[in-house]
Amino acid sequence: MTDEQKLKALSNQLDDVLTAIGKLQEQVVGIKRKLEGVNPVGDGLALFNELWCARYAPGAKDVRYAFAVGKDSHALKLVLKTIDISTLKQRIIRYFGDREDFLVKTKHPFNIFISRINSYAASPGGHAAVQRFDCSHTPRCEDDVTHTFRAFQDRQATT
Image 1: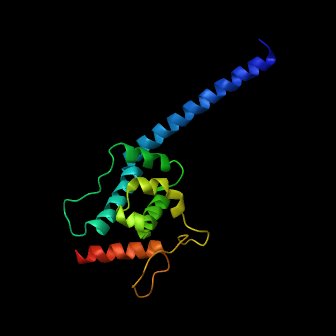
Image 2: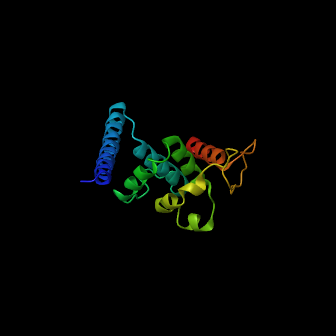
Image 3: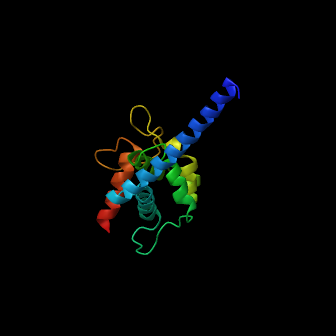
């Protein structure tokens, strides 16, 4: 075996070890979150469900968003590998603040949120990139996130 072949074999072994370490780290983080009672996927799905129900089924008691079992939680788990839960929650709030006709007609589906998740990132100033809300609050809300959160609180207070 030449020196070049030995180096290639060692490099491949290191890649395998790094892959194994990555998988172990995911398992350890998952176990730690369970012990601490932290469930970012569940928290994200719960917020999505709360905002969806507040918008499309206000006052209904036994209505929930019909998530695709396994598929939606898996998609969210992949997203949470690149962003943290607070960023995810901000993007979910911005998504429900989006008044695009298609989203309103289809009642803000989860799979569209996942496919457009980066479009709901905050602009460098900290505000949503596009303001698409009609605010009647006093004082007027500065951005979509604030408006959606206040509107959700208003709905909760009336039920």
